[in-house]
Image (cartoon, helix red, strand yellow):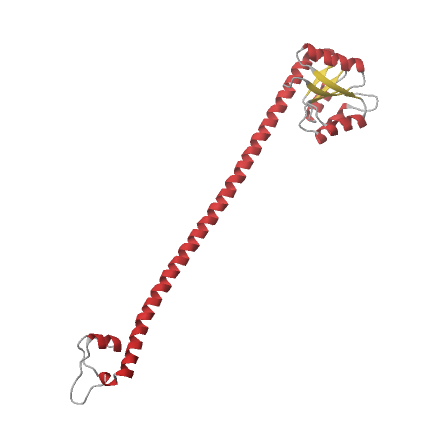
Length: 227
């Protein structure tokens, strides 16, 4: 608990408000209270913020605790709201709790006020801690999703690189085979141009080409007779 509690107190009786502060101080809860008693001042106070807890009377001359609770749930839902009233029937008390009030205390039983305030603040802190943990978990999940997305992208890049490498090797092999075939063709053409007699068979005998000549000419097995 903070060293000094900041309270927004919706109360039309100054005497009752002072009694509340004295009761809390006697129970070891020093506090600073801002007392308001109209809708406009209450709304201005919750919009300004900075309060640890709201204490509210149920009936006021120009305002009421039920409307104040609805405004508080809308504007500052994380701030505990304790109804503190001299007249609050059981049915109305239950309805108030269902509407979002943290607790209710009768003015005739102010001994319950300090324990109620402590419990309300503890529950608010637990809710805040739970929200922080949930947000941390969500942020952790977001980071994990980003990491997984980056990993998938890296894997895709690696696969693409492997495909390109395989295509490069295939293209290199095809080019090598093509060069070999082309070399044989060019060699045979050169032989035709420079020594055409070596590609022709004289009448009455067979000419056997050497391996080198045969490879250049692009013919069959060694020793095969020239046509």
